[in-house]
Image (cartoon, rainbow, N blue to C red; front, side, top):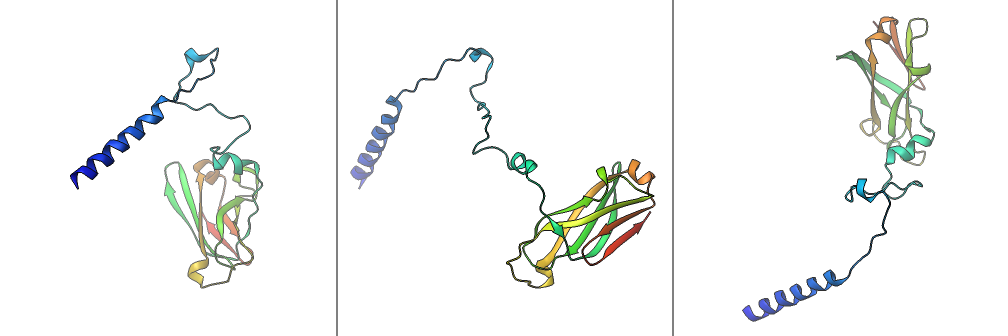
Length: 165
């Protein structure tokens, strides 16, 4: 038994040494002095390791309005408030839920800050129970925007909620 273990370890050690004999050559670069070999070069075309956010930044958002809003509340935060909205979709498996401002940059118009609750909703999924269709989204609103507003309005496909300030 000890002999088999010893022979197995010896064979594994011999095979591990085989990979070290191969040598690779790197192309010489003019600015090789100023580069860190541990940081990979950036591929201009994008590649396998390009971040998901960079890919999605160019794609348009395809969210549709959520069916109903079940709850909307504001919570104090440093420098403003956080608007937290819960909604109910028609079908389960909704994803990428967002509060989309109805006006540029979420600025108040006539004292009203307006948002629409949207999500990407597949059409081929079952309706399912309410618990499986609940979604949540939140957005930060600065004190500067709140100073010019008297209410926050959040719309869905079938209803809307208004929070008076």
